[in-house]
Length: 405
Image 1 (cartoon, rainbow, N blue to C red):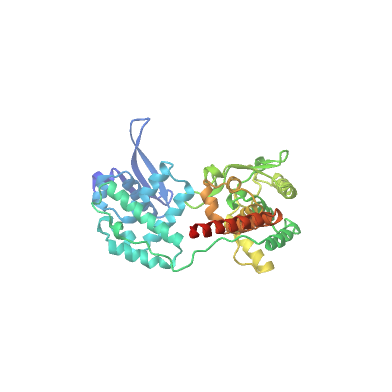
Image 2: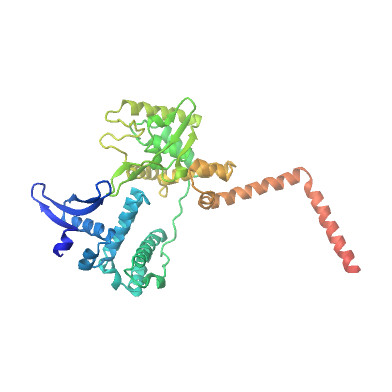
């Protein structure tokens, strides 16, 4: 790197901290001048990646001239820019970063963006047919977005992704299934007969199964979100992950529609009061979290899911249910009870009615058949079928007369 480009950003080792420090210039609007900023990392590789991200994000011409534009560094820079401008959340940043790190394991990820061909991209996509369609979509979108940005910035004259086809997965799409009524009854009985000391997540499962919360929403609840007087729960936040993958308390829910007020079922009230009492007695629970682990700040939702799977497999022989299935169970029971789709949408916190309809297509189809049976039964009870038969006979008679004429 030239002396001039070094003045824009460089890496140095700090003996006092035994860390690699990234130093770079950033324009401060309030002061009206460039100021030096720094960030420390445990390894030089981490520091290099961060500096590349900063320089490519700033479109530093000298830095780009001396280093080229490695494909994955372009991805990182674009992703960091979206995070810095609040276009994406920390959890979205973290998930996309995982996709980028997956791409980076292959030669194409370390290749200069202007050298990558359509054939290389197609070969890369075809290799990943073993992944789910959802994972393939993420890879395809990440590649496509990066090349569009490169075109807009003038780094490329032609987009090599135009000729790349997105392959279909070798796997069948996995569908989230709900517990059947019988399975739900057995699991509910099991939970209600268990002491909280022996099943620490029992009330998480009950809240999900009978109120439809996402597991990250349930784990973000505090005692302040519970209104015992009016028997309501205020869903305001969700546990999420920061850009480093650490669990944090989100500022809001997963979507804007996720913020909602839910009535507490009478049969669930005792379980919620039990959890509130536990939370009030806990040490180091300044946030008054409803579900606070003893030795960590927040409950890891993966642990809740793992424990659920263990219980269901061991006691009921069920292996295809997750914490998300418990939320799905609530939505299914709502539809089966005859609840209007728009009400289900509000209770589940879906942003759009189409999400609700698409998620529960099979359930709505079964419900539709039952509703048609009701109409047919009504016809029979009201002797409406006789009238329909007479109309049909009259229609046939009129057609015969017309043919004679």
